[in-house]
Length: 311
Image (cartoon, rainbow, N blue to C red):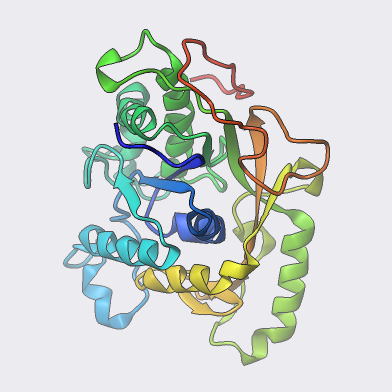
């Protein structure tokens, strides 16, 4: 077996670009520090809107082809972050973008939202048992803002964490592995409010129509919920470059960005998390996702997650 780095991080996201928005600075920092960062993206993002007029033909309501195009955008973004291990759940195109909640695409053949959770999780179990991550980062039970693919990514990631640690589950996928710490993506309310206050002052000189609202930012929670903050300011340029690589989805005017609605948001380079499984390092906010993980070994026991949702 190839020797793995001492620190290994698994990041699970729904669509290309989610990783750069939520974790771009974190991923760039840990990669630069020698950790193995593995990204698993669950769909190709086929239902996304398209910003550049010159690429409008890729939109799903026109010629299509957005999904394969976004595969290339993701590869370019990962190059900017230094991440070399990026994969699609079950292989590219195994699961299709489900669109927003309540639309017809939710139930199309292959839609990720309609996938059997255990079946989808088995694909992630294979990755977990191969790379043996110490830390997993994904969404909260609401997926940050209620998108069906984000919710499903959360369910699949948590289920795969349980399955991967159970020696009775899919021995054909490798030896069991228990992930020491699981985090959800978060944004502290005070940070978001401060960012939008600065944005309002800067907005007249920016190439965006207006400011987004605080409610448009996924994962905003009261500051007390935050357990961990990762200072990625040294990797601000890498995160901005990764966002720019997602040409069809994002426009960047540092330190701001906008999605297809042309509403500006702060581009955060300190990224925040809530620890939901594993031991918190100290009583203050952690500054390292790996704090307290040691070097986990293969296990035959599964640590109970704090997850309370029922499947």
